[in-house]
Length: 298
Image (cartoon, rainbow, N blue to C red; front, side):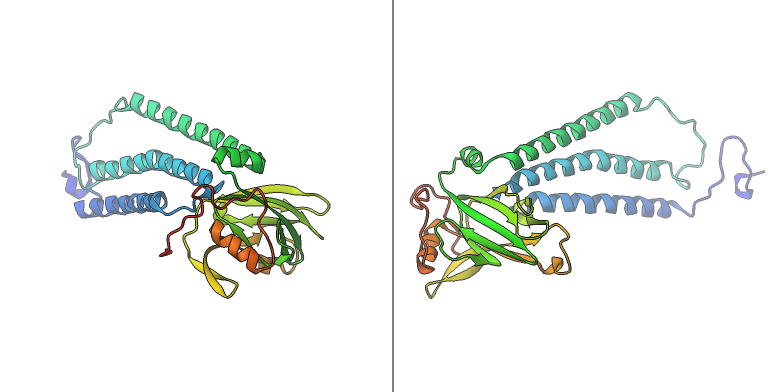
């Protein structure tokens, strides 16, 4: 009895596949998923990241984890695609005993190596981010080699943000202007319930708790000029970052937003004077080049 009528002569097996085209199709389906994953990794790797801390550290570890995922998951998916194409029904009619020793040691070494990389990255990443979160503004300035700092008191309330900037007499509500090339030292508290001050683009998140002051800081190296703000009847270039509340705080939680505008140090001095304020004594725009920006914007 032949293999075509559903039996086996001991050397051949029934061909249950439609054709080689089906094997190629499913192989391509698997590889398309891998290609999409690789594209997403390259898109993140090559994306313009704000020149600030601590978001740069977060981005670096994100790239590392994506790379590990490419090496680990990508190779595994590639092997599955190879197995489907090479050993799929319709591509081989003669039964063959599997070689259980092929690649055994190589796969063991690969699995151990990938596990080591993942665990190391997670521990080192968590430790680094923890140290960054616990670092004071002075420590951050020393690490970054920055000689400019500015203090900002942040108060949360249902459902608003209030900012008191060193040198500015008036409280800035819902929006605040700060200079680039400067470590922005924040002291965050709440007037009522627990809130959480968060700027996702800069990697900042700090709880605002009634009766407690929590320190936080961020640093934006330069201004790209994605928007403008008014200063004494003139428009100056600025970058904007959205402040959100990351702690459920009541019915107005979803609308509790604010905006941080970052301008160059020189233009910040102009803005402060136009709004009846001054710059702190420790603020020297003429030192360093942190305020340089691209006049053309994005």
